[in-house]
Image 1 (cartoon, rainbow, N blue to C red):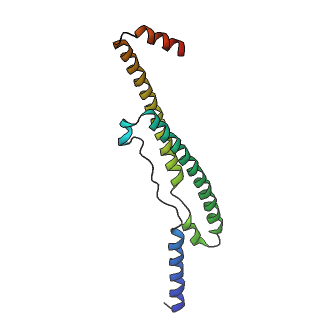
Image 2: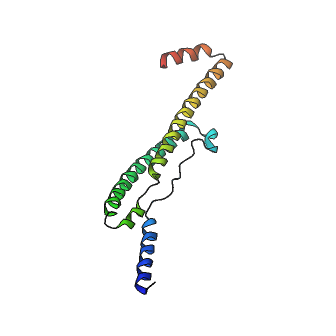
Image 3: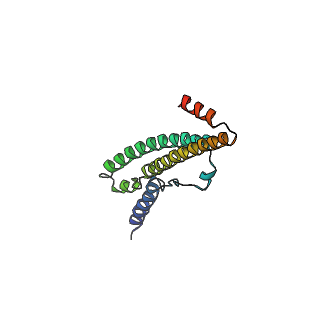
Length: 143
């Protein structure tokens, strides 16, 4: 192999390494059920839902940017085929957004369970203090 051939090979390998670094990160989807879930109250659930909504919006922006990058790399790849190695094939943003949406659904169900449990606790508490009729009147007038 000539020195020039060696340089061309080294340049091609270096280019592939640099471009592959732009391929995107591996997906890191959030777990739908998490250990701390059993201790979350409604306020904490709503706070996490709001935080997750912001994450989903950011992932949507990321996904749009990656799509544009993939289109550019795909077109340019016809001229410089090594650019195809720079395309993001992992779909990181989409996978993470799907996981967050599943988590949001779970948190919604958890919030409903927490609210129902709180309602039952109040009914039992009122009945234990002989206030069953007062609670019923309040519940029917507020609902």
